[in-house]
Length: 98
Image (cartoon, rainbow, N blue to C red; front, side, top):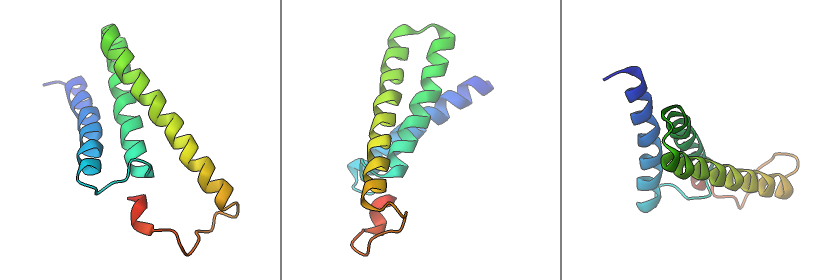
């Protein structure tokens, strides 16, 4: 097993961990942790797919990274709109972030 294999496995595990945590209701699909795990994991796999010229895999992982990034931007925008000062409201559930 070489470094590229380890990087690929790490990217896959990031996506799978986020998915498993969401299925078990440990992570919300709109949480920063869930979205960042998906973005980083799928971006890593997309780069590997590009280098390997694996076009179907690149389409899958590239789209996954883009959709996750768009979702993250939406979540961050909603948070900034609700709390322009950056302060959390008392009604906010702190566990929903993880």
